Amino acid sequence: MLIDTHCHLTDDYASVGDSDAVIARGVAAGVGVMICPTADPKDIPAAIKLSEKYENIFTTIGIHPEYAGINAADFITDEILSHPKVLGVGEIGLDYHEMGADTRDAQIKLFESQLEMARRATLPVAIHTRDAEDDTAEILANWPDVRGVMHCFTSSFDLAKKMLARGFFFSASGILTFKNAAEIRETFAKIPLDRLVVETDSPYCAPVPHRGKICEPAYVVETARCLAEIKNVSFEKMSDILTENTTKLYPKIKI
Image 1 (cartoon, helix red, strand yellow):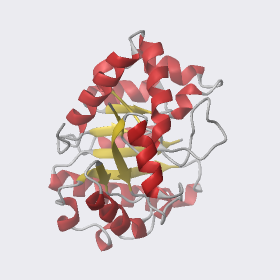
Image 2 (cartoon, rainbow, N blue to C red):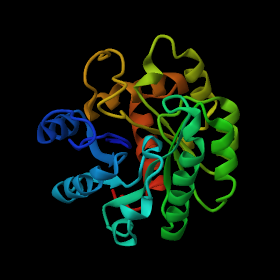
Image 3 (tube, rainbow, N blue to C red):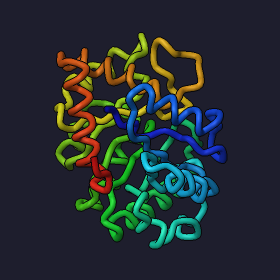
Image 4 (cartoon, one colour):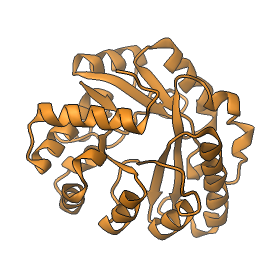
């Protein structure tokens, strides 16, 4: 069995089609558990509702840096974070690639407020970082008791070393399979087996041989196969490792 640790399945964020059919295809492909994060604050009720509908669907609750300027506390309450299907706080972080430099302060404020939420709730975090490695590491250093996962990790091994020392996990997406992703594959080759998890980031980043299609949880199998090749282990062993790691990252999942 595999776990897709990050797949956007709610229509308010990005449509992947009929959720029932998408989830069924994932299960048929061997993806027994799917974790639906939030990015748009309006997506939070839909993600929780979806997790309540399906036994094998969980969620992480967070606000993406593209919404910098809003107050996270207006959308994320202690009651929401204590929900049995809410595994963590995410996706949260910094993105200097998509947003202009003039949003940096607002991004940092939103990021820090959600790190504090995670600390209070003793929940792991799912971190989005793009062209913001130094600030991401510096800010996370101020919350030494917060652990989690570097979502869709494509950053440098320098950042990976810092986050490894902090006890973080690293999530591989379909980008790992891309022809031009040799440097990313080299980074994942250096990350210990016990710190790896896998995701699709549906509906984005469809792996080879599905590039150009709308991504969905069933495709996480291809990324897991790529990881198995990088680490020179069987697909079956890699699947077991990834599942075990995910349950350590998100202890609310009981398998």
